[in-house]
Length: 153
Image (cartoon, rainbow, N blue to C red):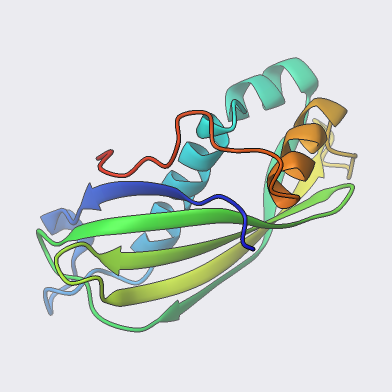
């Protein structure tokens, strides 16, 4: 069984499209971030708190996107995010971008994040967060606010 999924909806803005009227490819990574931050928020994890109170930043060390279909201006997009894997200093997320009107898969991707301290040195993820991530990966945890269906950005 897969881990819980966070869903958030957003609408393609004109500034996110290129000359052909298609969403510029780099915006998919921005949407991945929106989904990832929302998933963490639903799990009770704040990036700000992690960085300020625990001196733990999550640096992107790998990012991938497989484009399947074009997204265009004013399309409503569903960003699905789930935790895929976890190690002592690494967190791996996976994403799907779907067009809300027809459910078409627009893109799928993954990002891997390395825990680092203020000196940019690898560190372990604080136990407080590891506990939550482990619960999610073993399906013992659930999203605090349920799945964010219908939530828009």
